[in-house]
Length: 393
Ligand SMILES: *Cc1c(COP(=O)(O)O)cnc(C)c1O
Image (tube, rainbow, N blue to C red; front, top):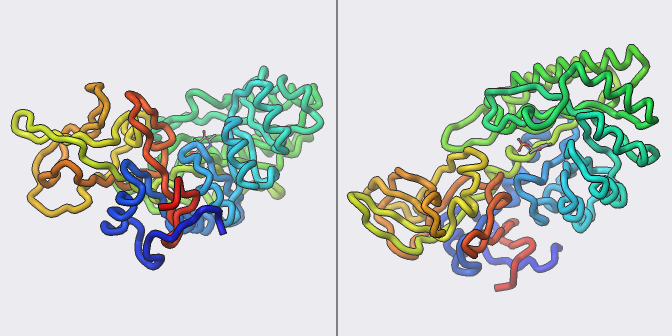
């Protein structure tokens, strides 16, 4: 049994139901990020079912929380880490280092040493300087070379900042071999919240060609890491994960024998598994519309409005009443801190609750405590219990 896990809700009820959410706010205050462990499991299982034979390394970045990691650990997930803090988090969660890879393409020597000391030995590189950093770690470490495939269609194009050109792969392999550093495979990330699987398929096909070329000159690449990018629904529904993955599965089936495919999903697992709860601190009628000031905003869980370009479905917890054009603002004194300039909400009063849906990914993770407004408290609810509870109510 996880330490410190009081039962606070009916285990059979949905923790996102209005009365359950209100009870959590009564017990733990506001703002909250409420994560449902059952939804996490369901999202993980659906992706695993849609990508059979692909080892799933959950990317901690979108929601680096210990109880989330523990729930996915118990589902059999592997993990994708990029920083010393993430290495420490999985170490404390008792995850075997063999289930982890380190995927930051740019690392300080101290980052490499920290990961190696924790037993993590697979790293990502995308340029000659980074390959040279492994000359002194050649006995322990193996490399994945990250290849860039530009994806202007993705909301967040991750191939602008990282990844080498496909033509640079062979020279990097030759450099690594000249230093006696092992190259284990290739990786790519087509960009987060991909609108369709076309880029994944194209990148897999291109990598299959690179793997065949490497094999022809005597280098066996045993891993293809297809990254993240698997979508989640926000206000606009996306392709469900099964049809999204079907063409990816077909492309992977055509890989040369002996290549183990792995993936680094983040968003698609955690985004739908959490809601944000905030509370109206005050309101004012300005012009012809009500402004509501919440205790969470753009500098908090709604930071993904800016950084992640996400538009969360937002509603009043108790949604009765005629919808009126309203403005939803965050708590800080900064004028940029407006969540929605125009949103239809019933007339709200101080103390009323507002819910943001699909808020598990890139929300709390990128929140700050600007103006000393604390970040939302994360509650991971598992069939009525709070895992990793901040305190026992
Ligand atoms: C952010 C990131 C991920 C997760 O991407 P999603 O689109 O959220 O699935 C995976 N791998 C790397 C290297 C990342 O930087």
